[in-house]
Length: 308
Image (cartoon, rainbow, N blue to C red; front, side):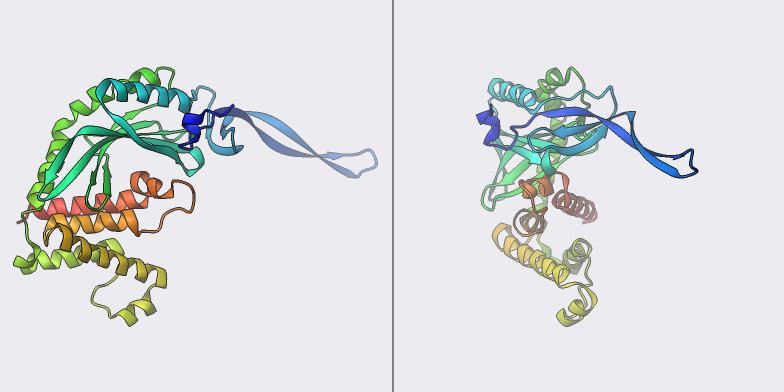
């Protein structure tokens, strides 16, 4: 029977461990000097984790690996949300269920310049044997729906799959509270970036150009025709989309480092190519190419801001 609550968010599947066998082939010499080849399945110490709804293999694990089911994780997250006035605003599978995610909306918001920012806690967990549970924080700029997710090295909390994973997930409020200083520092940086106007100095304008160049991988000094000769049409189009997002968002959020950062997050949220599968955009934003690009831009702007 389908779990209707999980079915609506794509998490209505269980994961099983199925034994893996090695296919050996042996050649035998017959009495008449002919040869016979026989194939035999040999047991191994390894198991495949399998999405039971699709029969898709998700990963390879050992005998000690403990599967934590989506229904158990979501039940705990609903308890956490209820007890702490969070709202589970979005969730789903990533790459067929190899990983999954849940986004919890917090009650409090932030203000950066003229922008209202909604705060989130989010959790990802894996069924592929490679990814345990990770807890981090994210945000969304209300006016443009740009979302940004971050796992700081110091603010990243990883939990491995084990029999007490549900109890560990209940500690999300305490975990996030312990990293509150890092989160507040991120919002402080956003506020400081909103005060740095790009058009006041050649150094700032050059940084904007270099940021675009580093993120797009294209030499800005080239003409459009030269770009098309040197790079694929897809790469050039993506670079132009990034430039358009930067121009547009700086017009909305200000001609500042904050506006520049929003240009990048707008691109990864709305224009960047993503995996062609269910929840592909979320996959990109949280653990894929979009996350890497946004966090690279964050680090570049953060490092540059310390020099001015």
